[in-house]
Length: 389
Image 1: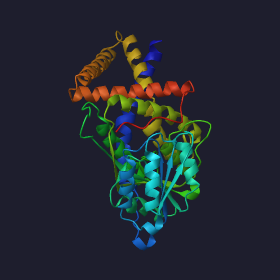
Image 2: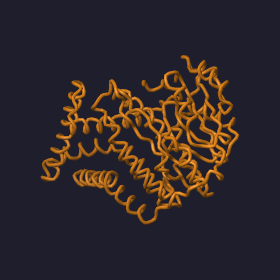
Image 3: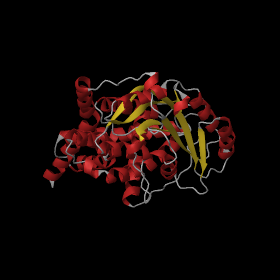
Image 4: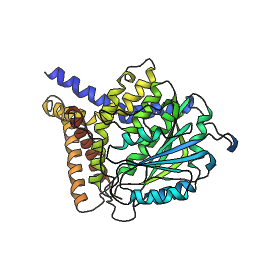
């Protein structure tokens, strides 16, 4: 038993170090020497694009979003915007009906029953007339040159998808300072940037990414998936490159409340596992490096909560066998105590910096664990309410 526990302990240590330290270093090193330059396009060679938005109860932001798109630096004779309302119950559809009369490049479609984002996108993709599809959200704002920068890489025929850079901004009011989503996102952006330089970006930002219409893969109807992850893996599975356009900038507000972020992460964790199950052939693929990236960036990180539980148990059971396990147990206990302190700071709306970071990390991994349990129990949903803004 001691030998088994020892093996579990050191295997988990190696996997954790690999996930958070070794993989980012290896990725950055390879991208530095093997990264591809992003091609540029002239205004004469701009392709025609269809921008798609699935909206549900977005009356607070939908008009501003359309105005944001209207003011982008792109030839609008080559642009169409298609918005599908997933049976919105607020004033979203009234706003869309009014604006569709003002802009001939805006098409709206209203669905009479809620079916979820993926089902709406399946429908409105069929309405798209142009060769490049841009996916975005109602609460996202594009930088003025975002479309130009996002579309540029498609001048290379082996590029099937392009992800833009999503920048998270803190709301000016009623924002919980203990929400460290922005800090996490900087780390995630670093990984996306370097994976994109190698043409194997694993998961696009749902707020700003584009693909070729002829390789779009319809979302499953029988179960929920994470739409941006699904399309990214589908394109990689067709042997096209998926790159990262760092200068194609978009902005979104961070959720005001940490519990809102928790629920969102649980939902995505559940659908992430379902999505990766559909592309399990990529986990052991002839493109060995692609499999390495998927395991390192996604799957191992999603399994961190389970590994952390096993590590704590192994350390506890081995505590009297060596000082290494005793110290490990103390460090882990201190880590969880710090998270508890961070929780109380959160309740008091106090930014305890390191305690808040540990608390945020723990609650993120708790969301992953809950999502895994929901996935294994077959519990997932196509529909959800919009994030409060």
